[in-house]
Image (tube, rainbow, N blue to C red; front, side, top):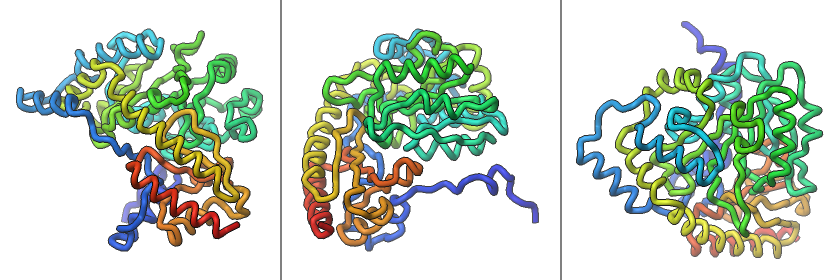
Length: 390
């Protein structure tokens, strides 16, 4: 019998971490509180739903523009200028099926077999699998945990070889919750420019920042526009995870290559949901601001509680919907703790080691995926669990 392609058999198996383990319990997991999955608890705002419904009723159900509906791309280009400081024309915007699709297109279009791609660690695991499918070799460079998981340009520099092609950036960072400073980003940009590297920038949490921190798009820095693929989505900012709607911005010279991937694997994004996206982007950031305020309240509650638990220390995340507490004080591995929390406390969290070796000794807890009442109950269970370890 013919065999599967080596891009399948010789690459890492896709893992869903503790989410898969919890899901496998079926009805036996009905009492679990889920803090492992980055799924927004909020509903998509009604005006966005109404716009998509109106498009359906108006007969917007046929083939559309391969790159994305022109009016939608024009609105996205305006948003990129106003919010991100990025000067891209509508022709340099590509609408995708979520940020996952955007990153797949970027890796497939830019990475040759044997090219090395740097992931900052702890990393977002979904990027790793796509790099491997493109034939790339993943090289991990740790973030500086003792300095709040900051970017160390000298550590990046030490990892560069003649085969290095790209650096992948997630900012704000999943799983650590860092919002990188302009100085950190400039240091990374200097490395990319000096070694003539691409940067693929995952900015899905761009609107979710706390304590007056401001997100900076690395493509807005000098020398970075033409070498960066900047990727965004409505997933977290507008609670549209099930809509699968995202987009990327890149220099016009890269667009034919990126579209060679997207036009072949998906033709184009669903037409009527783009009308919902248009309603979201033209309404400004009010929807996101309301959700972020709710998330910040839950962040503060969770961080305060974690810091009162034996063996646990947690710096407030600067952005995203995740806390990343240091649990090394318990003397247990992060996976052992995640397993025990599932079995004994009935709270599902993700082990830090799921995000690479640099995540060992930490847990990732998603406060954005539950209601305030569910978070209160989760904190009660977590506190009881960690106090039994003391």
